[in-house]
Length: 187
Figure 1: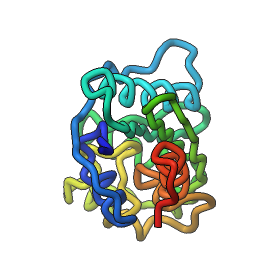
Figure 2: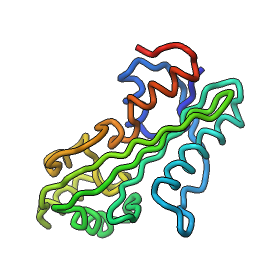
Figure 3: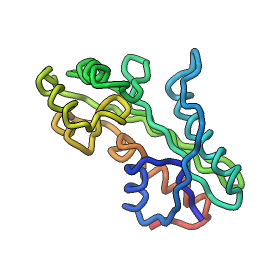
């Protein structure tokens, strides 16, 4: 059995998209960055921690943990605390390039890990556009205050990397890890 250690509806949708049967059991871990921790180390620690926490409860299962960070100028932009915070994030990303890192961990007999590192280039976003977007409620629970698969798609000039990784679960890397864990190719 494959267990997704996440409550993210986007991750569940992405797994369903590639035909994976799974159950959901979210991990309850502290998701605060550590002092001096790089964004790459942070997403790895989160993805591995989630997979290990759920695997400890269900050791017979293959557990998939994942974490995504939006990174601007080397700093992680988490989920916005409120509307003003979301506005600040959107306007800081406006007209700029940033990275989206998604770590994927699969815990079974051993730990397997992969990192998706994508670049997102946003066009200039006006204050009025940012206000309208925030009014939609979409930025509320999204890292970096936007969802590439939602209304924010109009702000995306182009990307380099994994679209599904930017959404929260890089499907190529995930399929590779799960194939190794199950010892059979996923199609």
